[in-house]
Length: 257
Length: 54
Image 1 (tube, rainbow over the protein chains, first blue to last red):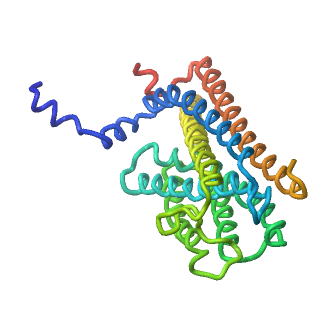
Image 2 (cartoon, rainbow over the protein chains, first blue to last red; image 1 turned 180 degrees about the vertical axis):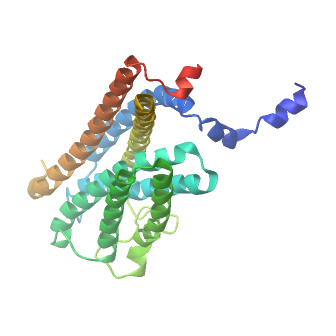
């Protein structure tokens, strides 16, 4: 093979790397190597973040309840980020037909549901001492509850359809339809009159928050993000095994016939 | 330690830890079970097409 033809046959950069992951066996090998490092980094960041949270001063208005912010806000960010990852995976299924897209979508759904649940519970526990109520049907809270229900719906649908190709398409379409809720959650505090405060970390490019609270929050957000990617890779690995078991059982059944 | 807000702060951290911890354990247990199931199927002589090619 000449040098020129070798260059042509090797697509460069990110897309080539992404294409190489289409092989689940190769993906499993990479995941096996990456997961321990990612998990260790997540734990280290979580420990550092928690130390920063518990040594941060009390807020002059909220008192010690500011501690809830450090776990509530990253959970809410992750709830939306996870859905965005699922939507990109849905595009991967429908547009590029990447074999791991459906695996990624299914693996992310329970993790997204868990972070949304944390965001709802911690928000509620923060709301009671600050607003005087655990719950109000305002735009932000209601749209996050809708996100939680969408996650549960996607998980239920994933279990309900037996045939993998048909399930992948249905899940991708439903996920993309549900994405309409993400900008609604993000901008609900600007579009409607809500009890929930507006964005305070990135307001006009400058955070409206003191560094004493901002740094622990950002470290916790990074820790949550790494936890998400670690769990996502772990669950993708498990999902691939589930598919292998299905294929093997089908082969075994064919052998019996 | 958290004064009058302890009843809100402690459950918040507990719920977060339990949910993330529970999810991690669930994912790990499921992965191990599936690995064991594959070993069992392979022991019965059932192979995937791609594993037979190797």
